[in-house]
Amino acid sequence: MTASFLNRLLRVNLTEGTIRVEQPGEIYFRRYLGGWNIILDTLLREVPSGIDPLEEKNKLIFAAGVLTGLPVTGADRIAVGAKSPLTGGLGAAEVGGFWPSELKKAKLDGIIVEGISLKPVYLWIKDDEFEIRDASPLWGLNTKETQDAIRSKLGDERIRVASIGPGGENLVSYAGIMFGLYDSAGRTGLGAVMGSKNLKAIAVRGSTKLDAKDKERLSQVARDFVERGKKAEWIKMGTGSRAMGFLTSTGNLPVNNFRDGEFPDAMKIDGETILNEMGQGMDACFACSLRCKKRVAAESPYKIDPDYGGPEYETIASLGSCVGVSDAAVICKANELCNAYSLDTISVGLSISFAMECFEEGLLTLESTDGLNLKFGNGEALLAMIKKIAYRDGLGNILADGPARAAIKIGGDASKYAIHVKNQGFPAHEPRLKRSLTFGYAVSPTGADHIQAMQGQALTIADTEGLPADPMLRGLGLLEPLSVDDLEQEKIRASVYYSMIIGALNCLVFCHLAQIAVEMNVEDMVTLVRAGTGWDVTSFELMKVGERANTLARLYNLREGLSAMDDRLPERVYSPTTNGPLSNVRIDRENVDEAIHTYYAMMGWDPETGIPTKAKLNELGVGWANSHLPR
Image (cartoon, rainbow, N blue to C red; front, side):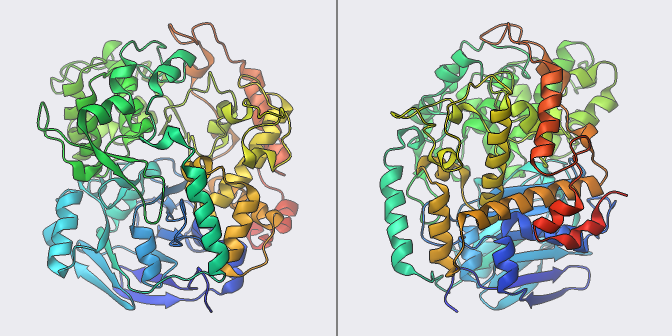
């Protein structure tokens, strides 16, 4: 059948050294669409509860969506998942580039990796040929050295490589997986799971053209997205460009571990400044018209390799203002190191900013930092600590397990300075400004996550008719602009609907940034899925796919021991910043708690515990999951 999915999952058992192709069927793909739902179905059905995330029984799942690989702006992405070594619950991340489409060209919708190899290996996929190869000579190499070595060995520069560097090998709890050299499945520690399996890389080369069921309709949507994307001026230089001044003036830019609110040198690290000083051009994912990815290079004061891309907003803020660094060259070098070592830039920044505050408060000394002066703004110390984290050297070994666990080891008042949810450090968005992030960060199944949580600002902007300007939100029946700083029922309702949309996008798997840039609405999603697959899907069906993913994610976390007690914010959020626009802002704890429990109820979960009801699981068509409810 000509369609945008292949009905083929590759199961690789590294313990036994076996590989086989499975075909779960068309109903399976229509019910799940791919991405998060495939990950959660696998984790719940196949991975025993309570395991250590780094032991043999954990599984690492690469799950494309039914749109992945189609020649449409935003469609070339894949989701990766496992039990997270960082949070102890669901580990999931989405990533683009060229690897996802190459996997589809090799006639695969995903890969399930199980077991542990006795020696380092990499997986080689070329169309219908699959092979587990020795990676002993590659162990210890960074991601660029790994990619170059595999391409040289196999004699093809167009092979797409997903790999880990020393961070993944050394089981850093927030190690990511690099797809190429600047596309990262960064969050929740999936690179550590890959490292625990002695899997250094997955190299893919495919030659099959992916076809849509309705090529003409797909082409029309693709052309429409190109035209819409031309209007998105804000994305032309990547995220964080021409924005730092605004972010500082509103208080959204995190400064010195979310403690302070003023950063006078913000424009020195603006994305446009970085491009003007070090820019080498812009790149894009497969078939994407937006070209939103910076490439930077320099010879001094640091040699910066353009092959590792350049920093986007989350990285600029996390490795810049959040650690007090205003030197663009330092930030670009730090970004390169994280990509080379396969480390999540956000988690690295929040772990080091935590350590810097501990140092300034006297909880860490020069002796415990191996002589590094970990004061906010010390760029040299930042770069040195990134390497120490990757190799688990000295203090780096403590910080490598995330801020919550590091605080326990450091002791004293260190927990006051750990800015996280479920041990995942905050992204670079301020919940004291955007109140929807308060309960959004708290209930996110993967810990603090700016994608899973509704930003809220989209609801404040009205079009000429007074309706919310965001077409996705209008299409959900949200017809009145809302204040960014309230926690009223309408804001929570909007977040519930938003979570269903994000859940669907996480399953398709579709780029969230592209969805915003091309002003994609629910009907666009329906049109794309119909064109790609030939199914007569409806908007209701797609919303239920997203709700299914979110509810299964909640269920999985509950099964692994997380509870409503883990849906909480760090104490710092309830106090104002020391200065700046949010210096007089206080968040009411009772309002946040009430919003969390209202969110549970609106999701069809128990309003006190957040446990999904049997009726809700049955209504979502996953009654089989009732056996995983807490007893």
